[in-house]
Length: 81
Image (cartoon, rainbow, N blue to C red; front, side, top):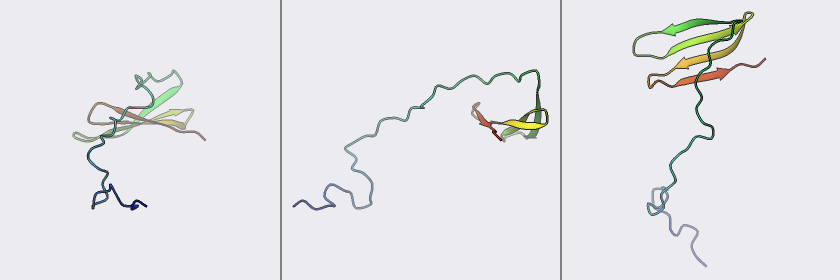
């Protein structure tokens, strides 16, 4: 019977002979849409060297939180009530 630990490295890392495939996103990135007519955008935080945080509201209710990251990407958090 073969040992359960055969083929494992002592530090618990997988053996270096097998390379994992590169990460690929499940969905394609989309361009951020412009706010609709009834949406209001309020900037909560904007400092040099840090992320910019905006809140998008419709009729006083927050619908999205936008975080503009330093690498140019935007984290778009949809809020559902």
